[in-house]
Length: 556
Image 1 (cartoon, rainbow, N blue to C red):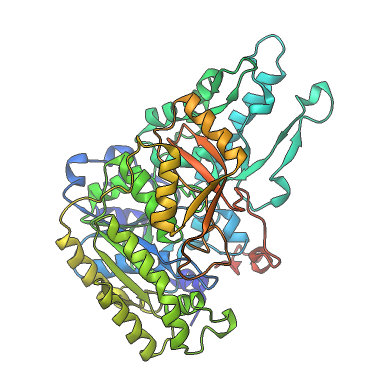
Image 2: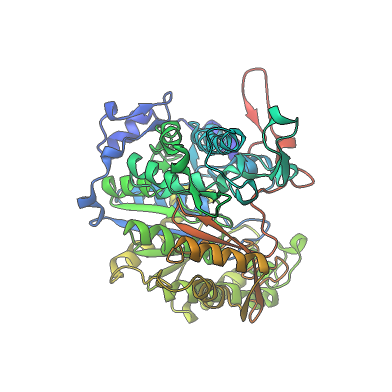
């Protein structure tokens, strides 16, 4: 079969005005970026219609190196529901250049379940990430400028400044730096660092804001440190949020593209789920629900990360609630969790599958705790045997959830009809909204322990000295009521990447707790999690090229 890129390049893409017609959007409402991309105005949000339509969340079991195909399944499901004669739109996050040039690759789907134009979406797109980066770094520059200014300053103690610069690239050398070298004209010497753009609080704010005014207010609430007198300093104190919001005036508008089969796709925002909330914007989701009967959206990485944050943060803030959750699983991923080696995953091994099924069971149990119907999407691969697939279906029956084969990668919408039918049925049976995991008013420690024990399966939580000091700061600032967004490895239910399957009774170590007062949540950082990834030994960038005619190759 052809590569993802070749399939996308060989597809005849429709003019974006044609896709807009499907949702009843007049062409003059669109802000065009060429023939195949456009920005959507926030005026398309119609709160009265949102409650009449259906939101479907796609999540997955704990990720493995081969990948489970969550985005591919989301797009394939959208194609399948449209083939059933219903109007469905997919709402996704924008890809970060870090994974594109690093290890994971792009985030536009795969095979015959993709969003297009694939190269544009994966590389810069409409410039939203650049706007997030510039707004973030403007605040960083204003902080340093205020510290440098001897006659007109807020008295900021540089030792307390927590705000970092960002860039949309994996670059481990920038995690911890010293800035202000070069004497008096070079600024105030202090320790600093970089995060990846997808982990920026600005990105989180973009995806939780209701409109431009709300975005500006949230940016003003960003906590940056304390004065020498011990008073808290916020971005609004620097009069930074107005200019920051001005840089985001276009980025706040969702991007409108299409699937390979010509169905609507809204792509907006791109926070990672292992170090941020991992979902696309509230604005994009609401526009989709205002215009379409069904909106399919995804939450990053496993259900312990993306789905939990989607529900306890995004839905809790926006008032949205999915009517069904699709849990993507593969035979090969469960065999990996059962101990089968990476190189042997195409070899049948029922014993490994049986041993690894605990990971699926834990995620199903967790999602049921939220009170939502679950459908397991079995993303089928060529090497899967019928015996292995039957075992997985039996496991779904024992867990009292529907199982459905998904072959969207190979056959597009036709390969997702079984999944589409079962998801539509599950939606029709949903009795109400989701049940939050915890009350926000409970203590920060209690909220962390509840997620750790109930969702991850931990036996206890250890707060290191830095985290304990952070808790004191949180209480001093009166922010203990905020929800939590735990930064944790995506490769295990625990904070230890080596613990596969369904680990239980482990200690979860909270190293520190970052304050994202603008976004409206707290970030407990566990284990060895870093907010600036590094490149692998063989970066994907080595395989990407462009010829003299502008044709890109090697993008995945």
